[in-house]
Image (cartoon, rainbow, N blue to C red; front, side):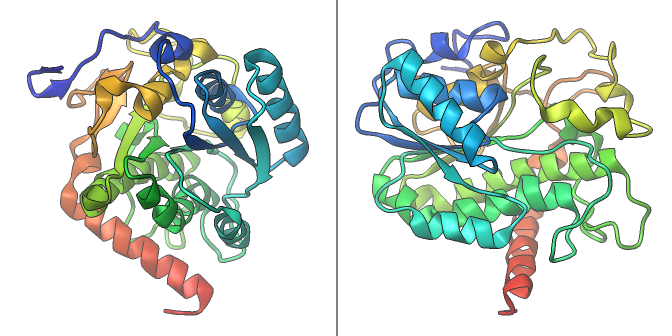
Length: 321
């Protein structure tokens, strides 16, 4: 249902992923979850498998992925859970994953990511957070478009962050070649890029029956995402402990709920190009509140520009520019 033009559901911040998917049948449907060996990626994969989907965990560490797949099978009884290698910061790895995929793809959860890491660059010279969080998923998702189209009613779920409110994409210096590297600015632009990607993909792929939405999973305890925070300096106040503006900390089961909603719930069937949090479409961001979506993250012109910039960066790396 809608409320003031926004999509609302009976679920909220404390709802778990299992509760969202309760009663949903995904038998015969195929899903990929990037970063599916731990945290909310693992929980998202678990509930999709519990609902009957065939699930591929796309992971950097295949040993950890195999253990996670075995754990999911043991807890759900679904034997169609497997791990496959994918390093989003390595375009050759992304290309190999895409080439190895055969048949339709019904659900793609772009979940993996890094946050506020020390300055690092890929082989192409790209800033690591933008390269991993956005460009890796951009190449993966566009590469899998034929498989998504073949499904007829596919869903792409892009895990962003409330951190996007701290900064737009730095179109003039995406790779921090002229400005001093700032771990939080780099993170923020990558998370804004996630939302802009969803906006533009939804526009471009509507005729293919592919729905694409982005989300903020919330402040979650017990994940590996924050492992670099101790080395990051000058973090924005909205990221610092105790500065949650009234937003409670979620457990992993609650943190995966919005991903599960967008991946599987009939309540959002046909919904595309939107940004969700706490299992409902987010409203506009208001200053001083760690919620909502920034206007620049939904801007269609910025979304189209980012799409072209991303294509150009990938083409230059492949020597086809």
